[in-house]
Length: 457
Ligand SMILES: Cc1cc2nc3c(=O)[nH]c(=O)nc-3n(C[C@H](O)[C@H](O)[C@H](O)COP(=O)(O)OP(=O)(O)OC[C@H]3O[C@@H](n4cnc5c(N)ncnc54)[C@H](O)[C@@H]3O)c2cc1C
Image 1 (spheres, rainbow, N blue to C red):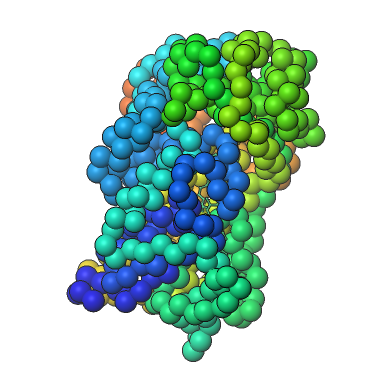
Image 2: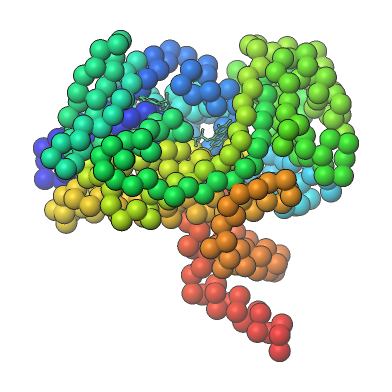
């Protein structure tokens, strides 16, 4: 173990985006990092059983992409080499809103403008490119077809994890165990068994379901840009339905139709075509004519977003932390989960480096990390809540405590046309390139207050 290292071994449970990026971040602070994944080792980029969401569109927002590129220089080149479609945000991806074609999702922006580049590709390709980079790190090892059962709780701390492989259990000792098992996380049952409280949960009943199919089109370039959404039109015949078409690697399109609050899409290709053809906006149905799916469509229902307030707990087991979807999962419509996980993994890496430099060890790491991880949930949770609660059928825990940030978002939106730096800030926070706290820097609060005082005088 070198002086910069904090321990002999770290265990990461789960090899989704949170698990892979955590492993990369941990690799400079531990002599060895072992990742365990319940799925078999993927041999292709098709969706795998442990990741049903892999059948559906996954956009890595610029905030997540920046961090992956920082960890793995040239990462985006490897995506493009394998067929990912480069996309200029604000220009190449658009949204048909009730008002017309918009170049932004959250507001109506009728004119294209140049924003940061991101890439569209299947979740399988994105994950494969990250996995290959992580597997190339000398001290990281990924074990497949192994399930994490429970932490080893001994002498008042977690000392590793009990694993199950082909029906046999086994123990793996580690100074730090990172739970990156996503929504399947068993942390809520582990904590009471170790004598700890479970966290409060905030829940938003966003109730959204979609069916997606990878199709081979007759003409890959039949629509401009790399993809579009037809958003629900509250005044239309089907006010809860939408659809999308997105270009993928390999000359395929990913077609999806979605609905909310009881108006859920069907599951077969034939029914899906019918559903899309009944839409107020005929363009997806027309583009899909003569296209064939390359495998059966996949259906996914997402009833609730959930944020676990681990940061409010006064105590947490030493040697254990949750990360990614295990802490917070967001309505997937807004494409934020992977970038939020990347930002949390970066926080973990920074915290470990600081502790190594200060020879501070691992004591109390969990509470420090959980506070930072919570900060990283604020922007994606707020943006999803602001959009979801526009629909009166949406119920649940609106983040009332973010009133100041909401007022600042309104202010920045209102001055964005005249003040390019206001628009830049809005876009950076919206793309998860900056935390929500950046909206509340004293300079911007002063400007907002001056504008308010000017109005009232
Ligand atoms: C339908 C849908 C669409 C989405 N679209 C987007 C999008 O466009 N953009 C975006 O950024 N995010 C999107 N997300 C969110 C995104 O998938 C997650 O936020 C992101 O992958 C981070 O999740 P994670 O790594 O924490 O967990 P996951 O991705 O769920 O990974 C968990 C991993 O742990 C493994 N595992 C589980 N239990 C065990 C166990 N006991 N032992 C060992 N391994 C285990 C699983 O097999 C899996 O590999 C979407 C989510 C859904 C549901």
